Length: 101
Image (cartoon, rainbow, N blue to C red; front, side):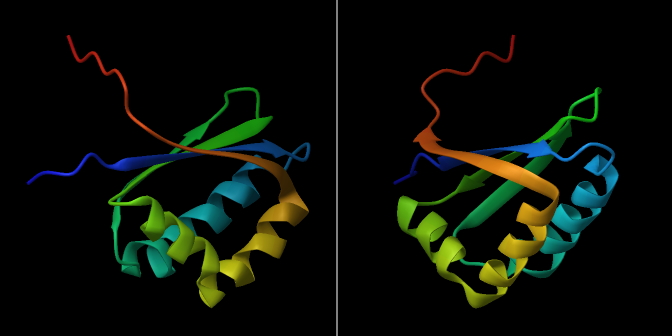
């Protein structure tokens, strides 16, 4: 049985001039924490051309995997660093349409 992945989208509104610093921090977090967690499938970072935001698109096996990530002490250690650079909005959902034509 194949499960539909859970999609997590985080939109980070960046403090002026700090987009590159935020991207470096997020990449380090993905390399050292996220990719080690059970249920993680993929992550993508999308940088706004105007430097005002970064979108994190990630897929997880289950909603419980997302909650476990958020509760992980290593992840919790990153949140204050991230919030020094940007504000965060988060959406957890499932893909309801995709067109690759």
